[in-house]
Image (cartoon, rainbow over all chains, first blue to last red; front, side, top):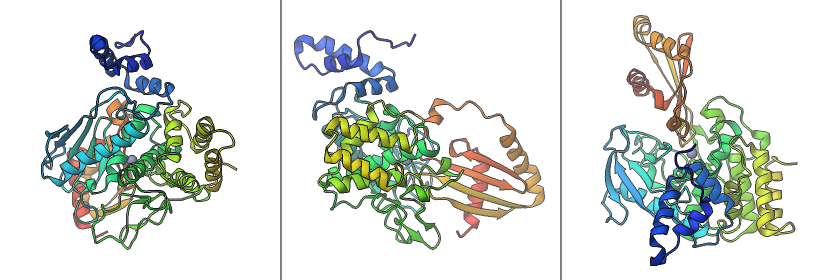
Length: 348
Length: 92
Ligand SMILES: [Zn+2]
């Protein structure tokens, strides 16, 4: 048996954990502890079954951020330099990471009612100043890690909020669908990170579909690179075009799907297709993208319909079903999702 | 002997390639045995930690007729040295 097996169903635990009556304080505390001990994947699934969660009813522990500093070495986690509620440190990377985790948690918690990436208030951990001239940002399964860049092509990765929210969304995906990081399922994993990555920024800045840049990683290139950002959801394939680095290789439609063995089968390349489908859905609906298009993608991600090895076609079906379930068969939302997937040639 | 290194993946998803020339003696002594071992080693069971990593780099290294693909998390110190040398020597 699973060591943390519990007979109380997780949604009930979640309800108990949220009780704020001193007479039930002991039960609430015990429920919170049990929730946290649940297998994270299972907890994510169960939380999904309890959806739809109305806004502002997130359960579990409140936001808790922990920023560590690797001091230029490739060692994790490094030294804790800023915990929740601590004053700004004055170190740009540390403070950008802290603020970025807060902005990401705000979208998931306030808009979608999900407490942290696992739905049970998991503390959010990040390490900055990783490695020497390290030109990457990644998710290691437990924390996000940011390099300072090589100073030649890339600057500090925390300069773009979308990089921070992209990495943290990998945590959300790990606890919801855990799409296998290879081929089409891997490209969907990447796409979810780009989609919620830009939504976090739009929500943070209060931007509508028309006002938003729809760019991922704006500002991480140095001045020496000819490019605005790393990826564009509005126009995949146009984010950069540089003499040395070449052109943004992302396709927007299935006709241009890239078959390759590098990059785990092009996970950062073919993500352009589902990215663009999301953009088209949001454009069709207008207003704030996180409210309707984002809600549909969130519902799809936590609804249990997506399998770890899902391809684009199944994902398209699940998002259409999510739109129908929340907004109705004849809704503009359902129609927007249907047209978007047809336009990127995933559905006929 | 020519060594070609291509790095794909990473947050940016950009493929970069670097190359360098090593003496046949150095290749025989240091790099070919290392590449042989990496290429022939049975695919070890991936740890859960490794399986959940996202946006990391993947290196593809070609030394003469031998080639090897290594995830960033499995780059040992000698490989890092070789990559560093290639990056320093390349302009692209
Ligand atoms: Zn990613």
